[in-house]
Length: 410
Image 1 (tube, rainbow, N blue to C red):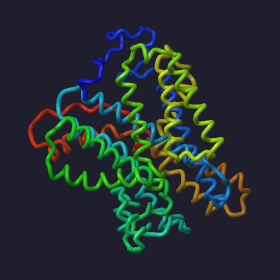
Image 2: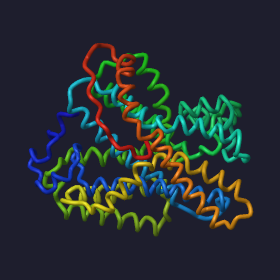
Image 3: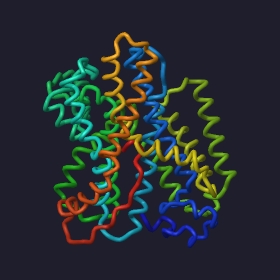
């Protein structure tokens, strides 16, 4: 597949990109303005999810709110977009890439998630007194292990439920860890995507036993969440984001299409017009695949335009970068913090309790970020040789990992 793509070196200037634009690009060819746009989307999505749980916790989910669905679609589109670009850029360098890719993904997802899940289990046994999860196994040792391995709401459990088999071991997110359902879907999509790209397309020599095991766990998640699942078709939404990422790489940094302001404007205008017309006729459902596709079209056009911007406003870009840095930690901890505040502020004015919960959620997220999340690169560096020894069938050199900002996430 790499041969289909235009050759791109780490230096944008060497490829003919305008010097004033090249100065603001990162090694992936993303301008400072486009990076700020991606950062803003990540931070906005995390806060939209936080707002959705305010509705659940304080208003018993009786208020109509589409923000959570919008946030989930944003996160899955961003995930597909960024991971696809990462896969394509990795393919341009020699060596076996799958061990490094998996090590980076595991480190990125698990470095903050594992301590947060353990903390939630402790808090659930001490200071949280209410059940917030759906029916199923959401507390105890088995649920804890299932959460640590991201096996909650696995397709097998959902198929058994459709068949009206009630099994005691149907694992759910650990009580207040309800938002983690999207992290599990994204993680197993990462695994399936790596199997497709590195094993099926690039023919990397990975031990068959690991390929079989990873495929057996991840592919059912992809299929189930393409057919239905909690978000109706999140695997397909991820693929739509991946298509946008492929097009950005294929178009190059300074080709006529990538540089065309008119094309970017037409893409945004057509996407917005079609989305508006569909909303008028059918209402707005962010989980609807056609709606998600049109949202992605708008995102794609905006990204193309901003990726040709010579400069970015420093203060907004810095704020976006700061917010995005801990958005995954915020996604992980906000619901638990909101629940604890809710349970321990009875008698408070609702607005005051909500304000306290929001502030504490951000502060706890920053603490988790600095304590755990920001160290994911060091964890990835440690895991790469471990994964290489376990996965590779030969002594082929392992490619150096390339850092990609996560969607959430994941």
